[in-house]
Image (cartoon, each protein chain N blue to C red):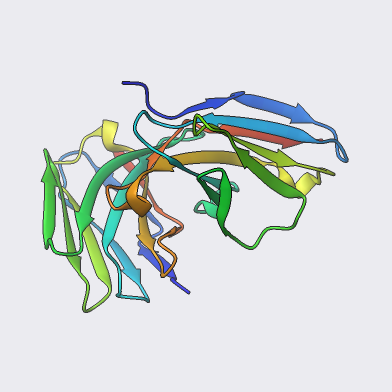
Length: 113
Length: 111
């Protein structure tokens, strides 16, 4: 049973560019959440998708947007990249509003230069 | 808004010691709490999930307790090993069911 799959593993982008990160949830999960983790910090919640709609959003600017597809996979898009967007981006999947816990992927390391 | 604090921030111990990692949270109206392990630059691996109706959960050398009324959870690691070296994070859902994380406890177990 595949867990949460994220791609790509690593990414280097130039300031001002746009980036798309992808996530496939664990089999049986219908909800995808995205987190940003800066070095030495705990993960910070970006947003959560359920039934192809954004259900909750954290304190992140509109440059961060997402999408969920009918097969429950999800994308995170970041426009007009800033140096401060450099971080590990984590995707987590769940079901039943997380009543059975969250499963995380291995993350995408984004470096903005 | 849920706020999560983890103490200590860092811990360095010799192999074989029994360890206690603490997690406190401000909103006690939670339905579960989850402990994770994170190796450097990697994703999060779930260790234990405690439902609000439970007082503790055990998996091998790990035991997590939950006291909702006092807003605290504790992760016990018995007979620590160098392979236990990692950052340990607790995640607590807030009113919107979204997990909020602490900053973690960075653990080093040296031989």
